[in-house]
Length: 305
Image (cartoon, rainbow, N blue to C red; front, side):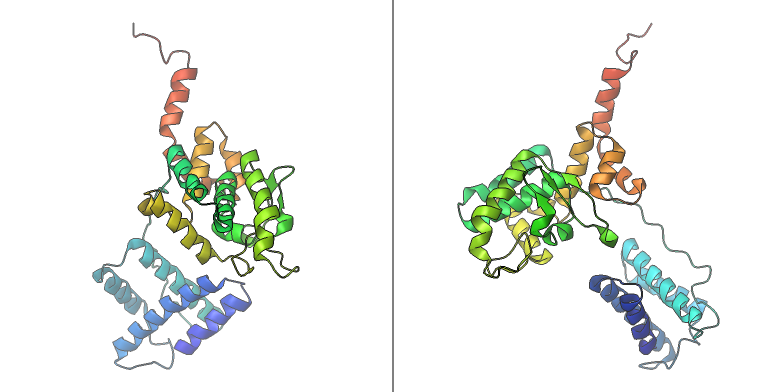
């Protein structure tokens, strides 16, 4: 059974081009399912999935519920099982799909946690308290994140040629390697320019290095490295429990909408394929909408007759 799981993981990695993190999540979920199936038969490992029925799958889902797994986690495991069994059917290894007529649990979209403008200002001010080269790099990174709404993964993958500080824009590559051009405000462009001229040369010893943001060894900064840096400054600003790698992205989107940007523009800036993804931020801007309504509607301030 686990051999079939490995075949499926290889298929996702090689033919579908899934990332390492995604394939690892699939692998962990399906190994858990395989262990459950083997346990039903009283064996350490079953030779095939032929004997695993729809009723067995329902039993697995009930087991997850009894173990108090979050709805989002169960939904992910269901999605992994659906893809896996669909793969086995298409490969001719299964005649019937144990996932037939089994739907995923409904997951409500959680509203993203955002910072206020003053909280963002406090967070971005933390690196200025040190004059070290690392702090100047960090200020440039945080300013660029908030200026552009980029994903953390997009920022660490930037090369020197992807940012134009003279004209004030950056070129991130989003999901599916889709390129977009995002304007950045002058202050962020200036800080990135200063970092490139004054700080980056102190770290980089290999002239062939293309990465925009690097660590002290001169290597491309990793997503995990940036997250640790961000957590440190969030702690200093007393925002540790409010900040995640996506917090500045969420705050950017919300503040843009509050400032009057239209939804389509924010969608393009964020690199969302579907506007429905961007619409989640409209739930966070009700106060702004109310104020705009009260200000604009000709009868909003009219006295009742």
